[in-house]
Image (cartoon, rainbow, N blue to C red; front, side, top):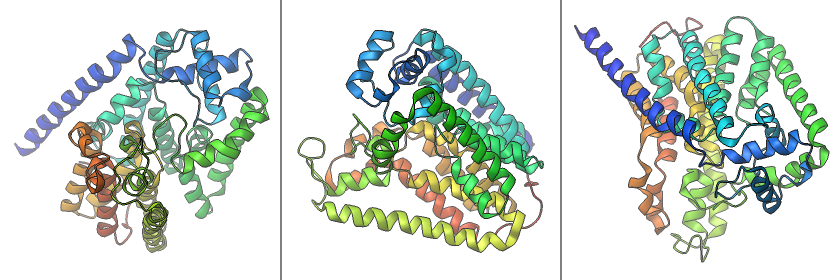
Length: 421
């Protein structure tokens, strides 16, 4: 009887989440383009038509091109902080109107969403409903990725595919999957670095070859100048949370960089009411916090290392979670990248019979994707109360702490979790 009730609850939750994804994510994307999707498409049109790619990071010129190509929708246009290969992402759709291109991207993303559920179920050994709840449970992340035409669902799918390929003994395919999106979105490189530390050189070689191939194609099509600009200025600004034409103080980024700017840096227009005017303290606190988190994660990885293969799942999970926690700027759709890390860590907590920790971990994950930020936006820029405007950051930190406290030893046993929620 209890199992039937649980199954009924899962079905109801899936139905509710599915309706939200369809009506708030898919339907709007099929009917209008009122997001920054035009930035991706404009860059693709410039690349496809052989335009002066070296001017992609010239914001005024780029917006002018958006007007000429009919991709401007009233939202300020810019290519920064995208990597140069991002301009090639939509080249196959360059001949389409913005709405038609967004419809195609939405269809591909929906297929990617389904593929992620299929592959993640194989990785975790969970039921269909449990896996689907994990994927759709990040709420606004899925909705906004679809609604805004963002590629993060496909990036997350590539990470899951790479991990799955490794688990079935296909290292070359694993490396190719993990390297596929690195030139566009950096996240998967942390997995390649980890497998490099484990001396799994075929995965690393395949990943490096894939990255190099895409980079070479990008240089051949766009030229070297735009890549030099990216390496010399755009990348460094992005790594410290300074993004062209965007407020570096904005709580929408939900990062330590943004929070500490709000607390300690005075700006007469953007941040007139910091808690303390101590810009030097901002830098010290930023380094201390990020170094502390990174060191705690490293110590856990070293403690798990002797467990060998059994340490891979929690390690990949912790590395993925830590990467998002330390990122200089995140948006809601970035949380789709948590599917594999959260799934692997939840499976480990389940296998280790850490019931309370598992509940706290998954509850925090669900809140990451569903917390109504409008409830706390009023605290932004109000001195010390600013800390209340960063719920996603604190929830990610809570998930990180729960994992460190609960998985003190790497789980031993089967390669894939046997328990299925």
